[in-house]
Image (tube, rainbow, N blue to C red; front, side):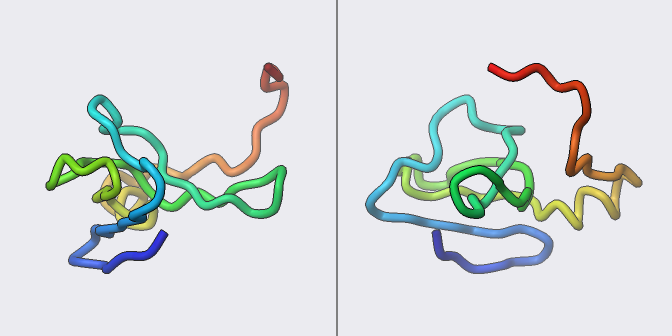
Length: 81
């Protein structure tokens, strides 16, 4: 996925894969690391072109800074599906 960073937001696109659909707002945006891990990048806020190949999201650092929240990066006793 490639893209541009605007003020505290990222506009990302990937022409060969559907990355955004109606109802995705609020979903986590992450990057896969290998086959069993991921890195949180932010929270989906929209697709300005309704193209399904574009997403706009707030960076996790912005969300943490504005809200005072801390992103959980590991979890214990989580159910496995």
